[in-house]
Length: 314
Image (cartoon, rainbow, N blue to C red; front, side, top):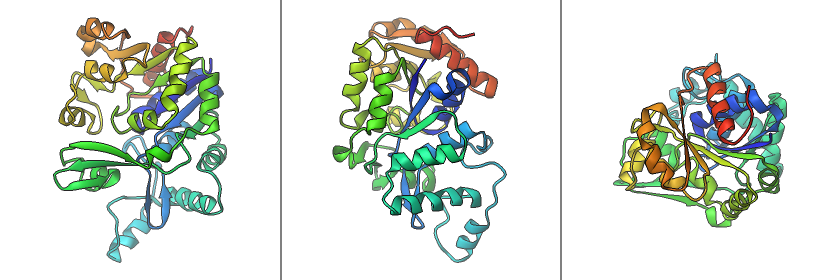
Protein backbone atom coordinates (compact mmCIF):
# COMPACT_ATOMS: atom_id res chain seq x y z
CA UNK A 1 0.00 0.00 0.00
CA UNK A 2 1.48 3.34 -1.07
CA UNK A 3 0.75 5.90 1.65
CA UNK A 4 1.18 9.69 1.56
CA UNK A 5 1.22 11.42 4.93
CA UNK A 6 0.78 15.19 5.28
CA UNK A 7 2.76 16.10 8.37
CA UNK A 8 4.45 18.69 10.52
CA UNK A 9 6.03 18.64 13.95
CA UNK A 10 6.37 15.91 16.52
CA UNK A 11 2.90 14.37 16.05
CA UNK A 12 3.48 14.00 12.34
CA UNK A 13 6.92 12.50 12.92
CA UNK A 14 5.62 9.97 15.44
CA UNK A 15 2.87 8.80 13.12
CA UNK A 16 5.33 8.67 10.22
CA UNK A 17 7.51 6.31 12.25
CA UNK A 18 4.49 4.12 12.94
CA UNK A 19 3.43 4.10 9.29
CA UNK A 20 6.97 3.26 8.19
CA UNK A 21 6.89 0.24 10.48
CA UNK A 22 4.02 -1.10 8.34
CA UNK A 23 4.73 0.11 4.80
CA UNK A 24 8.43 1.04 4.81
CA UNK A 25 9.57 2.42 1.46
CA UNK A 26 5.97 2.80 0.32
CA UNK A 27 5.55 5.79 2.68
CA UNK A 28 5.99 9.34 1.40
CA UNK A 29 5.82 12.14 3.96
CA UNK A 30 4.94 15.58 2.59
CA UNK A 31 6.20 18.03 5.21
CA UNK A 32 5.21 21.56 6.09
CA UNK A 33 7.83 24.15 5.15
CA UNK A 34 6.06 27.18 6.59
CA UNK A 35 8.05 26.82 9.83
CA UNK A 36 11.39 27.09 8.00
CA UNK A 37 13.69 29.97 8.84
CA UNK A 38 17.06 31.52 8.05
CA UNK A 39 19.27 32.05 11.10
CA UNK A 40 23.05 32.53 11.44
CA UNK A 41 23.10 32.51 7.65
CA UNK A 42 21.74 28.96 7.60
CA UNK A 43 18.62 27.37 6.11
CA UNK A 44 16.82 25.61 8.96
CA UNK A 45 13.92 23.22 8.31
CA UNK A 46 12.40 22.31 11.70
CA UNK A 47 9.47 20.16 10.57
CA UNK A 48 11.43 18.35 7.88
CA UNK A 49 14.30 17.58 10.23
CA UNK A 50 12.02 16.38 13.03
CA UNK A 51 10.51 13.84 10.62
CA UNK A 52 13.90 12.92 9.15
CA UNK A 53 15.65 12.42 12.48
CA UNK A 54 12.70 10.40 13.78
CA UNK A 55 12.60 8.09 10.77
CA UNK A 56 16.37 7.70 10.96
CA UNK A 57 16.07 6.71 14.62
CA UNK A 58 18.43 9.46 15.81
CA UNK A 59 15.93 11.93 17.28
CA UNK A 60 15.97 13.14 20.86
CA UNK A 61 12.69 11.76 22.20
CA UNK A 62 13.05 13.57 25.51
CA UNK A 63 13.28 17.08 24.04
CA UNK A 64 11.06 16.19 21.10
CA UNK A 65 13.36 17.90 18.59
CA UNK A 66 16.94 17.70 17.38
CA UNK A 67 19.42 14.87 17.70
CA UNK A 68 19.99 12.74 20.77
CA UNK A 69 23.29 12.93 22.67
CA UNK A 70 23.90 16.44 21.34
CA UNK A 71 26.59 18.88 22.45
CA UNK A 72 26.11 22.64 22.54
CA UNK A 73 29.57 24.16 22.13
CA UNK A 74 28.62 26.48 19.27
CA UNK A 75 25.51 27.81 21.03
CA UNK A 76 27.51 28.43 24.19
CA UNK A 77 30.09 30.32 22.14
CA UNK A 78 27.43 32.43 20.43
CA UNK A 79 25.83 33.25 23.76
CA UNK A 80 29.20 34.33 25.18
CA UNK A 81 29.60 36.67 22.21
CA UNK A 82 26.17 38.15 22.82
CA UNK A 83 24.74 36.73 19.60
CA UNK A 84 21.30 35.24 19.12
CA UNK A 85 20.93 31.94 20.98
CA UNK A 86 17.19 31.68 21.62
CA UNK A 87 16.81 29.14 18.79
CA UNK A 88 19.09 26.41 20.07
CA UNK A 89 20.92 24.26 17.56
CA UNK A 90 23.08 21.36 18.65
CA UNK A 91 26.54 20.91 17.17
CA UNK A 92 25.67 17.87 15.03
CA UNK A 93 22.37 19.45 14.04
CA UNK A 94 24.36 22.47 12.84
CA UNK A 95 26.27 20.14 10.52
CA UNK A 96 22.97 19.32 8.81
CA UNK A 97 22.15 23.01 8.36
CA UNK A 98 25.63 23.87 7.10
CA UNK A 99 25.52 21.05 4.54
CA UNK A 100 21.98 21.95 3.44
CA UNK A 101 22.78 25.64 3.07
CA UNK A 102 25.82 24.88 0.93
CA UNK A 103 23.75 22.61 -1.33
CA UNK A 104 21.02 25.25 -1.73
CA UNK A 105 23.60 27.93 -2.53
CA UNK A 106 24.85 25.82 -5.43
CA UNK A 107 21.33 25.98 -6.88
CA UNK A 108 20.02 22.59 -5.74
CA UNK A 109 16.26 22.34 -5.35
CA UNK A 110 14.99 21.91 -1.78
CA UNK A 111 13.35 18.66 -2.88
CA UNK A 112 16.67 17.28 -4.15
CA UNK A 113 18.40 18.35 -0.93
CA UNK A 114 15.71 16.60 1.14
CA UNK A 115 16.10 13.41 -0.89
CA UNK A 116 19.89 13.54 -0.54
CA UNK A 117 19.64 13.97 3.23
CA UNK A 118 17.20 11.06 3.44
CA UNK A 119 19.68 8.88 1.56
CA UNK A 120 22.57 10.01 3.78
CA UNK A 121 20.55 9.13 6.89
CA UNK A 122 19.53 5.80 5.30
CA UNK A 123 15.83 6.51 5.64
CA UNK A 124 13.78 3.93 3.77
CA UNK A 125 10.73 6.16 3.32
CA UNK A 126 10.62 9.35 1.26
CA UNK A 127 10.37 12.84 2.74
CA UNK A 128 9.32 15.68 0.43
CA UNK A 129 8.96 19.42 1.12
CA UNK A 130 5.43 20.59 0.32
CA UNK A 131 6.89 23.02 -2.24
CA UNK A 132 10.26 24.23 -3.51
CA UNK A 133 9.21 27.88 -3.21
CA UNK A 134 9.77 29.72 0.10
CA UNK A 135 6.66 29.95 2.30
CA UNK A 136 6.77 31.47 5.78
CA UNK A 137 4.03 31.20 8.37
CA UNK A 138 3.35 34.40 10.31
CA UNK A 139 0.95 34.99 13.18
CA UNK A 140 -0.77 38.21 14.17
CA UNK A 141 -0.62 39.00 17.88
CA UNK A 142 -1.31 42.10 19.94
CA UNK A 143 2.38 42.94 19.30
CA UNK A 144 1.87 42.77 15.52
CA UNK A 145 2.90 40.14 12.99
CA UNK A 146 5.51 37.64 14.16
CA UNK A 147 7.43 35.04 12.18
CA UNK A 148 6.37 31.62 13.36
CA UNK A 149 9.57 30.65 15.20
CA UNK A 150 9.66 34.05 16.93
CA UNK A 151 6.20 33.23 18.30
CA UNK A 152 6.75 29.52 18.86
CA UNK A 153 10.25 29.38 20.31
CA UNK A 154 11.39 32.83 21.38
CA UNK A 155 8.06 33.86 22.92
CA UNK A 156 7.14 30.34 24.06
CA UNK A 157 3.74 30.45 22.24
CA UNK A 158 2.49 32.93 24.84
CA UNK A 159 0.94 35.70 22.68
CA UNK A 160 -2.66 35.09 21.65
CA UNK A 161 -2.91 34.44 17.91
CA UNK A 162 -5.44 36.67 16.14
CA UNK A 163 -4.73 35.69 12.54
CA UNK A 164 -2.42 33.44 10.52
CA UNK A 165 -0.97 34.02 7.07
CA UNK A 166 1.43 32.15 4.82
CA UNK A 167 3.80 34.62 3.20
CA UNK A 168 4.77 33.57 -0.32
CA UNK A 169 1.98 31.00 -0.66
CA UNK A 170 0.60 32.58 -3.84
CA UNK A 171 3.79 31.80 -5.76
CA UNK A 172 4.14 28.27 -4.37
CA UNK A 173 3.23 25.08 -6.22
CA UNK A 174 3.40 21.39 -5.31
CA UNK A 175 6.53 19.82 -6.77
CA UNK A 176 6.31 17.16 -9.47
CA UNK A 177 7.45 14.65 -6.84
CA UNK A 178 4.60 15.59 -4.48
CA UNK A 179 2.01 15.41 -7.26
CA UNK A 180 3.37 12.05 -8.44
CA UNK A 181 3.21 10.65 -4.89
CA UNK A 182 -0.40 11.78 -4.47
CA UNK A 183 -1.30 10.40 -7.89
CA UNK A 184 0.19 6.99 -6.99
CA UNK A 185 -1.19 6.88 -3.44
CA UNK A 186 -3.46 4.09 -2.23
CA UNK A 187 -4.15 6.09 0.95
CA UNK A 188 -3.59 9.65 2.15
CA UNK A 189 -3.11 10.34 5.86
CA UNK A 190 -3.40 13.71 7.59
CA UNK A 191 -1.22 13.57 10.69
CA UNK A 192 -2.31 14.67 14.18
CA UNK A 193 -0.35 17.88 13.65
CA UNK A 194 -1.55 21.42 14.33
CA UNK A 195 -4.32 21.85 11.73
CA UNK A 196 -3.73 25.61 11.47
CA UNK A 197 0.05 26.00 11.16
CA UNK A 198 1.32 22.50 10.31
CA UNK A 199 -1.32 21.06 7.97
CA UNK A 200 -2.80 24.43 6.98
CA UNK A 201 0.21 25.58 4.94
CA UNK A 202 0.35 22.28 3.04
CA UNK A 203 -3.31 22.48 2.08
CA UNK A 204 -2.91 26.16 1.15
CA UNK A 205 -0.29 25.52 -1.54
CA UNK A 206 -2.10 26.31 -4.81
CA UNK A 207 -2.83 23.06 -6.61
CA UNK A 208 -2.54 20.88 -3.50
CA UNK A 209 -6.23 20.84 -2.64
CA UNK A 210 -7.20 19.96 -6.21
CA UNK A 211 -4.64 17.13 -6.30
CA UNK A 212 -6.02 15.71 -3.05
CA UNK A 213 -9.61 16.15 -4.27
CA UNK A 214 -8.77 14.29 -7.48
CA UNK A 215 -7.30 11.44 -5.43
CA UNK A 216 -10.42 11.27 -3.30
CA UNK A 217 -12.58 11.23 -6.44
CA UNK A 218 -10.56 8.22 -7.66
CA UNK A 219 -11.60 6.46 -4.48
CA UNK A 220 -8.40 7.01 -2.50
CA UNK A 221 -9.27 7.13 1.22
CA UNK A 222 -8.16 10.23 3.12
CA UNK A 223 -7.76 9.48 6.82
CA UNK A 224 -7.19 12.34 9.26
CA UNK A 225 -6.12 11.89 12.87
CA UNK A 226 -7.15 14.30 15.60
CA UNK A 227 -4.32 15.97 17.46
CA UNK A 228 -6.80 17.27 20.04
CA UNK A 229 -7.70 14.81 22.81
CA UNK A 230 -10.26 15.74 25.42
CA UNK A 231 -10.14 19.35 24.25
CA UNK A 232 -6.37 19.65 24.69
CA UNK A 233 -3.30 19.38 22.48
CA UNK A 234 -0.76 16.87 23.76
CA UNK A 235 2.02 19.22 22.65
CA UNK A 236 2.13 22.76 21.31
CA UNK A 237 -0.43 25.56 21.06
CA UNK A 238 -3.02 23.96 18.75
CA UNK A 239 -5.82 24.04 21.34
CA UNK A 240 -5.27 27.69 22.24
CA UNK A 241 -4.80 28.65 18.61
CA UNK A 242 -8.03 26.96 17.54
CA UNK A 243 -9.95 28.84 20.23
CA UNK A 244 -8.40 32.26 19.55
CA UNK A 245 -9.12 31.88 15.82
CA UNK A 246 -12.80 31.12 16.40
CA UNK A 247 -12.77 27.33 16.12
CA UNK A 248 -13.72 24.73 18.69
CA UNK A 249 -10.81 23.15 20.53
CA UNK A 250 -12.04 19.59 20.26
CA UNK A 251 -11.82 16.56 18.02
CA UNK A 252 -15.07 17.73 16.43
CA UNK A 253 -13.58 21.16 15.83
CA UNK A 254 -10.65 19.61 13.96
CA UNK A 255 -12.99 17.31 12.02
CA UNK A 256 -14.90 20.37 10.83
CA UNK A 257 -11.68 21.78 9.35
CA UNK A 258 -11.13 18.59 7.34
CA UNK A 259 -14.76 18.01 6.30
CA UNK A 260 -14.95 17.70 2.52
CA UNK A 261 -11.40 16.37 2.37
CA UNK A 262 -11.19 13.50 4.86
CA UNK A 263 -13.21 10.36 4.31
CA UNK A 264 -12.43 9.02 7.80
CA UNK A 265 -11.41 10.73 11.03
CA UNK A 266 -9.61 8.94 13.85
CA UNK A 267 -10.38 10.20 17.35
CA UNK A 268 -9.12 9.06 20.72
CA UNK A 269 -11.40 7.00 22.96
CA UNK A 270 -11.67 10.09 25.19
CA UNK A 271 -13.67 11.74 22.39
CA UNK A 272 -15.91 8.81 21.47
CA UNK A 273 -18.98 10.88 22.32
CA UNK A 274 -18.25 13.12 19.31
CA UNK A 275 -18.62 10.36 16.72
CA UNK A 276 -22.25 11.03 15.83
CA UNK A 277 -21.52 14.73 15.27
CA UNK A 278 -18.47 13.85 13.17
CA UNK A 279 -20.53 11.43 11.10
CA UNK A 280 -23.00 14.22 10.33
CA UNK A 281 -20.14 16.08 8.65
CA UNK A 282 -19.96 13.27 6.09
CA UNK A 283 -16.79 11.87 7.64
CA UNK A 284 -16.61 8.32 9.00
CA UNK A 285 -15.44 8.41 12.64
CA UNK A 286 -12.99 5.81 13.93
CA UNK A 287 -12.33 5.47 17.66
CA UNK A 288 -8.90 4.29 18.83
CA UNK A 289 -6.26 4.81 21.47
CA UNK A 290 -4.22 7.54 19.72
CA UNK A 291 -1.52 8.16 22.34
CA UNK A 292 1.87 7.45 20.71
CA UNK A 293 4.04 7.06 23.80
CA UNK A 294 6.61 4.64 22.36
CA UNK A 295 7.56 2.79 19.18
CA UNK A 296 4.98 0.04 19.75
CA UNK A 297 2.22 2.60 20.33
CA UNK A 298 3.18 4.47 17.17
CA UNK A 299 2.94 1.29 15.12
CA UNK A 300 -0.37 0.45 16.80
CA UNK A 301 -1.90 3.86 16.01
CA UNK A 302 -0.58 3.67 12.44
CA UNK A 303 -2.20 0.25 12.13
CA UNK A 304 -5.55 1.74 13.15
CA UNK A 305 -5.09 4.49 10.59
CA UNK A 306 -4.28 2.00 7.83
CA UNK A 307 -7.27 -0.13 8.77
CA UNK A 308 -9.42 2.99 8.53
CA UNK A 309 -8.02 3.34 4.99
CA UNK A 310 -9.12 -0.20 4.16
CA UNK A 311 -5.79 -1.99 4.56
CA UNK A 312 -5.34 -5.38 6.13
CA UNK A 313 -2.89 -4.94 8.98
CA UNK A 314 -1.39 -7.78 11.00
